[in-house]
Amino acid sequence: MKRAAYGTVKKKLLEFETIPEVKNWLDGTGIKSTTRSYYLKRLCEFLDGEPPKEFLDRALKTPREVSIAIKAKIGPLAMKSSSVAFHTRAAVKSFLEYYETDVHMNSKVKVKRAWQKPYLSWEDAERIISKCREPYESIFRFMLWSGLGSDEVLEINSSPKIQADIAKQMKSNKEYVIIDLEPRKQTLTRYFTAVPKAFVPKFPVHTLDYRVRGNKLITRQVLEDRFRKAAQQVEVYHLGMGPHTLRSAFTSQSAMVGAKESVADFVTGHGSPDRYGYRREVLREEYVIKELRKLQAPRITEDALRERDVTIEELQQQVKTLQGQFELVLKTKITKET
Image (cartoon, rainbow, N blue to C red; front, side, top):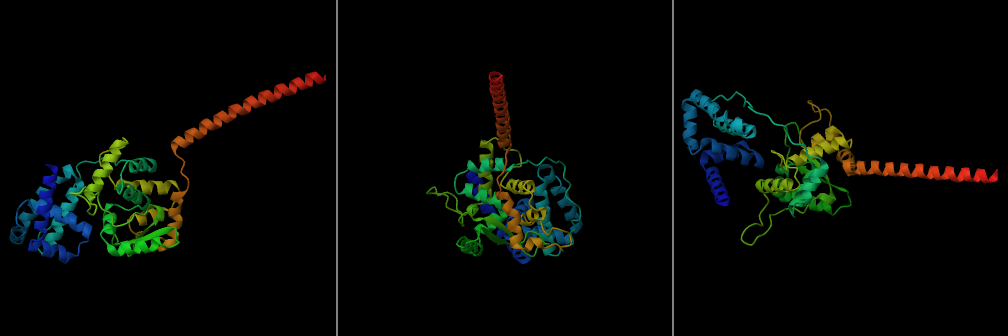
């Protein structure tokens, strides 16, 4: 049933994308591929069967009424998911602005609930990854060491140009591979990350081949499902945890090993280290690699620290025993001589 439902939704989106008003909007605004899929899905769900042309006609004729109706429809979405609400608002706003309607969407999405984002340690991330089969084990470990999210991985996986550049670097004598990507923020003119060669999988990556299905480019949904299942197996799963949480593990570990915060911010695509963009040291590949190399330093885990404390205690006890034996031997020797 789930497969049929998923197939129906996918078919619906493909048909929705071919509608002239939708296609012209997506092509005309130059939305990047990852954002394009978000916007397409959210606009389709928002219209809920209403033809895009009819929606535009209403927006042109009665912009105030349409604006109020949009707020009333998007507001409840925030009760379930603020992310869905934000993306829906952004998609509808972009669509209406492209066709130059007078619908005003100045109100912000009000988040009705909040939750504590799950913490994922580097060690637990490794435990999750170790529970995955290939190619997912390699992909998740790549994400952990690169600081990249699903969007960037899918961008690499669908770009022959980036893949060719990676393959060329893998043949070089350099320790790290520099991966140039499309900037995630407007404050960036160049965006890249540096990854140790040992953790760079062979792109493109396909799903497992099961004869009648599989052997296709990995999707966001597949990555989400595999990660969640592995996290549940090692009993560290929390609501909201997914492949994106590996970026949190990367950033947290970078701070713990003393890597510059500006580097962690840059490789995760969070823009310039300062609001005016004067600090540009992160654009030097050598500087970025130097800081990221700190992640490869031996890490001391809590278990290792406990084992160290036990060993120290045992050695101290051995020292006391040997000291007592030495004092006894010395005392015996003195007694015999007198």
